[in-house]
Image 1 (spheres, rainbow, N blue to C red):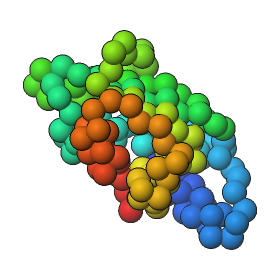
Image 2: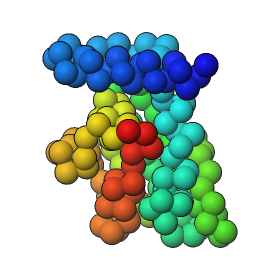
Image 3: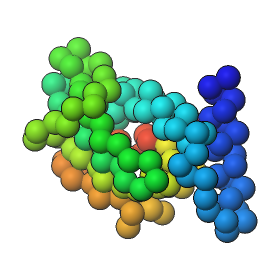
Image 4: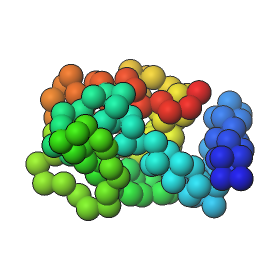
Length: 137
């Protein structure tokens, strides 16, 4: 049921964007979407973007739904999601909730929202993470 609620909320956001009526970004469905997208983030960072082993990547998301999460990549190359911020991360991203959703759901390219995403760290790593950010289409 969680995946269905996620899909319904994401498609609602697609319709709202197409009609020029943004909203409902902090609804119960949005919280479900946050959890689904966060569950996918370790694979994005550790597997798809091949972040360095023994590194940390920080995501600072603001707006109607705010969160600060760290993906730690262990020595075996596995990623885990943590709520504790990392000191001296290999990369960090700061962006608003709506942009996070649109990137993670494959609705926009990183280039299309470059002005809304602040990425710090090694440029090849940040580019690889953003290039692989979409977990659904």
